Amino acid sequence: MAQLEFITSVMQGFPASRSPREKDGALNMTRALDMTMLKHPKVGDMLEGFFVAYVIPELGSSDRFLRFRSTDLIRTFSAQMRWRDQKVSAASSHATLASSDTLHRTSRAPSAAS
Image (cartoon, rainbow, N blue to C red; front, side):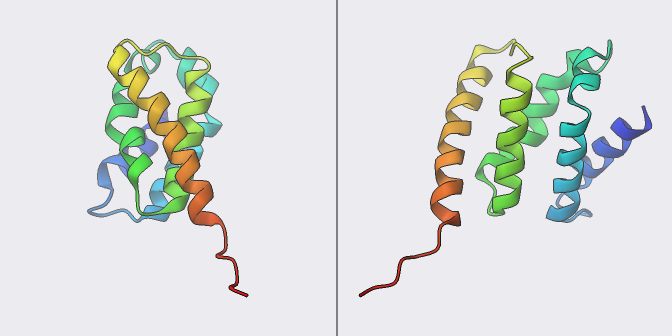
């Protein structure tokens, strides 16, 4: 699939030759292709490695939009996917909850002092 090759090239190029916005676009494309990727005979078996290499690390990103996108992907795919490595499953679940909390806290405007 040409789309998957493009997504992979962007992921592999980040951050050396690809910007955070480009990675966000590739993660968004991944979200759009979720069921196709899950059901694909070759891709489905490689998704855990993809998440470990490219998605889970973004839970700690300094870019809020990458934290949001990675959290969204983990939630979406986790509903349909069984992680083989239970440590990855537990780590991604905890990281998603922590990242969601962090995302909400950092996106709120500071309150004005009276």
